[in-house]
Amino acid sequence: MSSFKPEEISKIQQYLERTFKNNGFALKMREKAKDSVEVLLNGEFIGTIYKDEDDGEISYDFNMAILAGDVG
Image (cartoon, rainbow, N blue to C red; front, side, top):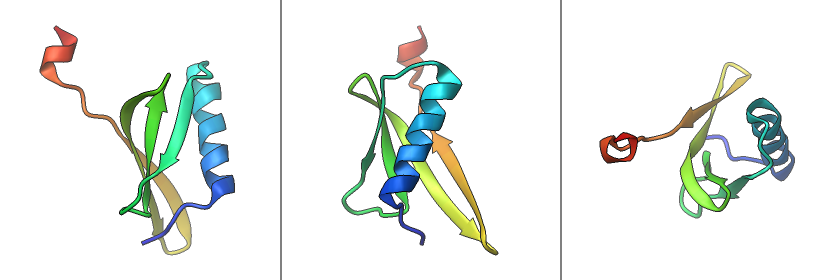
């Protein structure tokens, strides 16, 4: 299990802001799961980013659940 470093969280947040052209993103450490952070958009929880480290390679997986009722 790889935990997030503060500078890593900042870089990922900047990446999301650039990619989606929206400055409303905030990443928040989770208390019990150190291998992931919560993703908030304009203060609302929208998903989780998990960190995976395998053979020295680091990747991030953004998981966003979309409820059927939310899409109409």
